[in-house]
Image 1 (cartoon, rainbow, N blue to C red):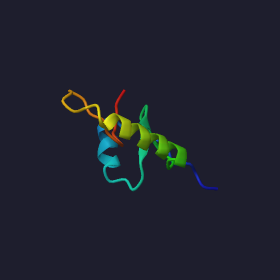
Image 2 (image 1 turned 45 degrees about the vertical axis):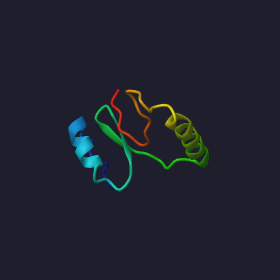
Image 3 (image 1 turned 60 degrees about the vertical axis):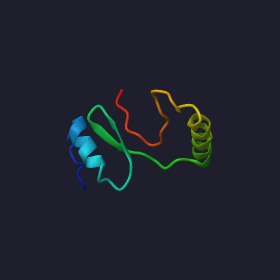
Image 4 (image 1 turned 90 degrees about the vertical axis):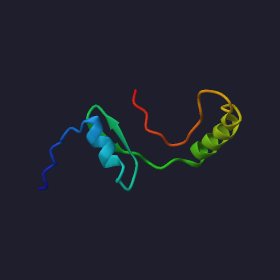
Length: 73
């Protein structure tokens, strides 16, 4: 019977370095890494609509809109 691989916790810096070369996107949470699923058609439509609306506002302001970014909370 196959054995489960032990979970080796990642720190944030290791995760970010590893994620740069990963073929798919992942989410990092409390030392664990989870593969992210692809976006649905509804998600893509909503994202594009919001990006189009927000695109007009940053001109001359100290902020900007963007797409797929990594955010630490």
